Structure formats: structure tokens, C-alpha cells
Amino acid sequence: MKPPIALLGTGLLGAATAERLLDKEYPLTVFNRSEEKTRGLRRKSAKIAPSAEAAVTASHRVILMLTDFAAITEVLDEMPPDAIRGRAIIQMGTISPAQSRSLAERIGASGGEYLEAPVLGSRPEARKGRLQILVGATPEQLERHRELFQDLGRSITHFGEAGKAAAAKLALNQLIASLTAAFALSLGYVQKEDIPVDAFMDILRESALFAPTFDKKLKRMRERDFSNPNFPLRHLRKDLRLIMSEMKQSGLEVPFLEGLDRLVSDGLNQGLGNQDYSALYNTIHSE
Image (cartoon, rainbow, N blue to C red):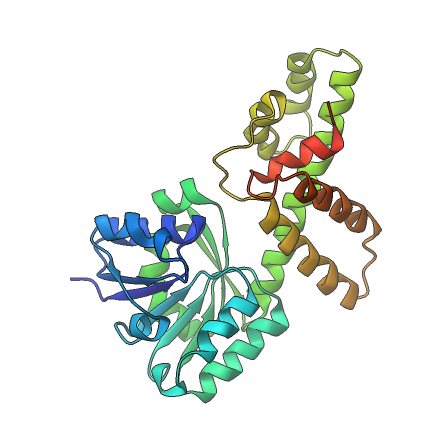
């Protein structure tokens, strides 16, 4: 039998990751502040903990898939420090390098072990064990938890100490926002000029300009159907603001991201926050 796992945070990605763990026959205990998000997992044989502390004490390995650093801090603040002692805390959400390093210090001071392992991919990849996992930890820590990462992902990249993988994840998520906006703008212009979209896409796919995400979002944009999201627009804004803050602190210029943040905020004001992030198209190409 595989060793038990506790998972805190069963939102879209957290729930899909939990399903994968159950499919790989890990005994799993989950906790989410909104209990209704755990009901489907209960039917799949996951144990539902009444509190984060109860979930953590059920296992020596704990995966955090919480919304942001504030949510992680809130959950940790609700537990006595001794709850962490002797346990490995694996942080898989998107937070800043400084936030990750502060967690490493806090958990280490409580006698726990900390690894950062943010992921690239969404629900389909999580369910199939095809996530790309970015690891910030010592080489020894990575080896101790490699089997778990292999069950969750198709690739594991070790970036070094805690904070490095968090930074790499922000750099990648910047491209999620920027590529989506750039494609939405070009697609909107093509449609405004009555250029055949299929002909435009044929040229784009054969060029060095093409990114696979364009095809993944094309149908949604053409049909303006942004339902059943894998990554909602409100989460994109949360990440975008974190990215801008971090990159400014690094001395980088981000004016185009500030304009993009305005477009994303317009989408939230239009009630698109819970729709797929490709709904950004509606704020660039309004009907």
C-alpha cells in the first residue's frame, strides 16, 4: 500500500489532483474550507477531514493546493505548530519566491520539512498525471518524494533551493496571460477585417509565431463560450498582479502587463471572473 497523503485545497486543480492520487491508490485525506467542493471526492473514497489540522495529522506528507499565500497562512495559523512537526509540506500553488522562502523558514522552525512544487497544467493534465512539476528543494528532498511527483506529473524539473521554482512558475504564468491577450488581439483584428480565420490559422500554425495554446483557445474565442473553465479569469488576475509586483521588484519594466491587468479587471467587472481565462477575448474584441 502506498503511504497516505493529505491534501488541503480542493478547488479545480486540487480536486483533479486528488482524483489522480486516488486513482494511483494513495490513501487520501482532504480538507477544503468550502465543504461542498469535497463531496465528489468523498464518493471516490477520499476521507474528508473536519479541519486542516485533522487532515495534516492523518499523514506525514501534506500537499497544499490553496488559492494564495494568504490562504496558506490562514490555514497554518489555525493549527498548533506541533501539527507540522515531522511532516513534509509540499506547496504546489502559485506564490512568490519570498513567500515560499518564508514558508520554508516557518515550517522548518516547527520541525517540518518544506518543498515547493508548483505545477504547469490544469485539470485534464492533473487527472492524467501529465502535470509539469517545478521543484524547489534539496536534491535529497527531491529523491525522497520523487515517486509521488512521478505519479502526478510527466516531467519533474529541479530548480534548486526553495524560491527558485516559485520564480520560474511566475515567469511561465506571465506567458499564459500575455500569449492569450496577444492571440485574442490578432484574432479580433482578423475577424474585424473579414479575413478567413481558417486561412489565418493555417499560416500561423506553419510559422515560428505559433503557440499550441492558440489552438486550445480558438474554439472558445470564436464561439465566445468560456464555460467549464480549467483556469478561471479571476485566478489569472491574482497571478498577474503577483507577477507584476515581483517583476517590478526585480527592476523589470512591465507597462504592457499593467494594460493587460486593466483588460482582465474589465472582464471581472463584466461578470466573467468564474469563466475560462480566454474570456479575456471579450474585453479585447467586444461585440
